[in-house]
Image 1 (cartoon, helix red, strand yellow):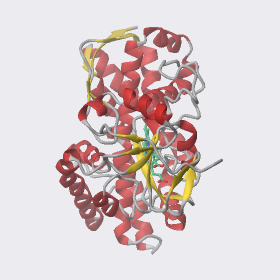
Image 2 (cartoon, protein in one colour; image 1 turned 90 degrees about the vertical axis):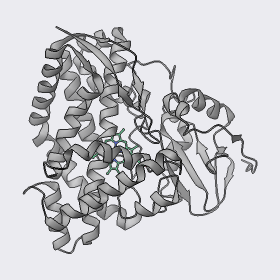
Image 3 (cartoon, helix red, strand yellow; image 1 turned 30 degrees about the vertical axis):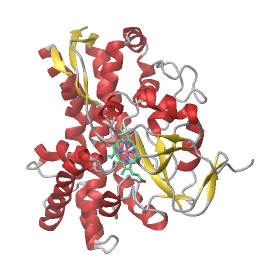
Length: 394
Ligand code: HEM
């Protein structure tokens, strides 16, 4: 295939407030321009289609993460030492430490507690009747991972703000990044304090990280970043998936009936929610040598933006991609990424989202929208900030 050196250019800002609230017309316009599109404002090659996103994610030798996956140089420096921002042996070592607490066997030991907490969350919501679906969605992620990491009780009230700021900081250097960067650095400072005072609970994953540091298997400084690796990506992402599920089932009552009639569809439904709503909009990689993507030249040093949210709605990869249908097999969706950096916490995220859906199926007849939803303004997370709902008991 001849290599094209002219790349189509897209001028609108994908990180403007309006594009964050409704990115889908932008994604459609980008996909129509071609497989590789230059974003003028952010000086990156964007990949809006499924095939090229998947190809780059699976080629970690050419497209590396150790120059950071954010769109600004400050975050790409501050995030050094995390699993997400590493390659090769460093990445394997860090990831295996994280993965230990998230293996299928480790998850099985947590299942009963997660199911009980999901049931209690849904029962409390039903007792109120009218609820903010985002608050309902937040309850489980906010209790599960902090307990798993052994995070002290005090300081938990800041976690959501800190984690949201950590995602914001991975966008371009816009006002939203600059305003939230101090909170993101605050999380790092606080976590370093926890490591110094060893104030994590015994037997927790945080405790295992401290032991690994004392045993010389990780550097002491890595302890704090690895703890943040567990916490920061586990909150807004899962909250977004659960609140999107609530919103989608409230606005697609025929899909809710299908799920009620056949709870075995929960597994499919989780994939379809993550495909349709893609909690993480995009991360980037850097090409280490001259290469091409779908016949477009990509010079060494180019930053490439993987638009997960767009790939998951690409009509070249999906039939009728803008319809929400839990009968579709959406297992190959890219909302959790794929390849060596594919989400290490996806088993837990799937478990939490499934637990809430099963708890709803058992107790709720209908989920109704009770007012206009509001989308959160975050550079990376696509999710709701407010979702008025009425839950009608079964
Ligand atoms: C619905 C919920 C979630 C979504 C949509 C999601 C999405 C993603 C995506 C797209 C990536 C790949 C990034 C890349 O390759 O550039 C990723 C990586 C990661 N996720 Fe998740 N995630 C979710 C939940 C979680 C949870 C619950 C945890 C922790 C318990 C977690 C921890 C991580 C970590 C540590 C990485 C980096 C893995 C690596 O670099 O090897 N995530 N996630």
